[in-house]
Image 1 (cartoon, rainbow over the protein chains, first blue to last red):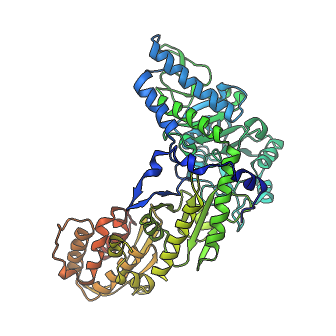
Image 2: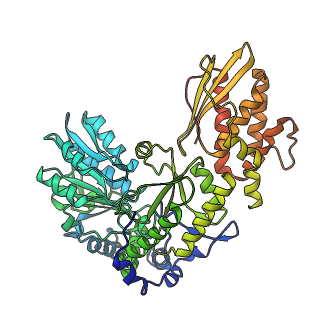
Image 3: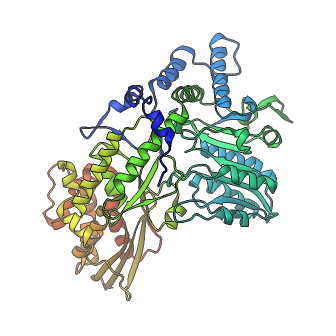
Length: 418
Length: 151
């Protein structure tokens, strides 16, 4: 069960959720005649007007390709694109803007590291450690690398509350361990992992660590220098920004040593048919015209989130999580999957003898959008003995009234299927 | 309950979901196939005893939503005693019904209780739920070993 903390109570009076809701045009939408109750924020978040306007501004006023034109629009577009990089660098407190690589999202960021850093540092018989609660995007790239290199993938087990078993993690480390990649906060359980401890233990053994921050980025303030992670990956669309844009943070010495991921324009400084000299960082990893509007939109999203304050957002979401957890706990046959004390606003559950897809369809008719399925974490579903779960996940604009609508919807389902 | 929702979750479907018929393994089956929907994790195993071209017995096991479970349950109830040809004919009609290809006022009297699945037409995301058991049954009839995968 999540713990009620004092900050949640203190912030309550100044957190004006009704005012925040007005920033999000889509929240006016009706679904099946009912006001939309959007509780699928772990899948993707809605976008505030501030972000939509900035994207529109780019297309309507300054659309041009970046880093290559001498004309006014190209310079302005380049400037906005590069300012977004600085906003992101400051947001996670990277040492320099050259450590911020634009990608298509968390998945591409992880694949980039596996295919470049992994390729030169992992060899036959070496080992890579991930955890049992990884998203498929932090399993498959490493599995592919292990297959190619004849290396071994090891998995940190998860206890019944849905927490990593740290003692077992320590036992998995061997002189052959070459890389560790773990998720900061689980998308299906909500568990926040002790990543700082994992990184410290890894570094004592000389092993680099990638942190998948896809779910953590909009709930937990992240300082990459304090964490001391070697790589950090996240997506724009989980933090109220657009889809198709994401970030790979990497320590500069790693990024410099890594070979390029893709070849093409923008990542070169000189090309002849005999030889190519690669561009400096971060451009070495940004071949081709990027999602310029996406990057600008992500910069705007982070500005928006910073204005409200990640701490305030986390406190608000924690309060919703506690209310929801309490309200659904006594529903007949309901089992919460993921009961760690330390959770982000993710509530996964399973109703006895009622399949999550039926739950999802019924709630849809109440206007409530939740995720049902395996959440791209099939090994984790197997660990908890369920084929799928229903998952409500909270965002900065959700309200306690919406939690009530969810709970009443679940009660109706129990009546029909009971 | 909303009208559209009520048409999807008819009493017959809720009943077959709660107490599915022929939900067992046939140890001495002559035919078998398994089906899987990777999108939602639904899976169904179909067991058959065929005597020449007649379905002597048919059963299923697996896990899935109310629609997929009720569909498998009703399917096994209806196909018992039918010939392979009859089973294929019913499958074709059923498939046209749930994929909304029979027009506005379809003649579905011959489908009997299967008519309760007409509501699925309004839910494109749930068509696979209703048809997984049927596709798997067709594979079982021809003893095709490759897993049916719908998405």
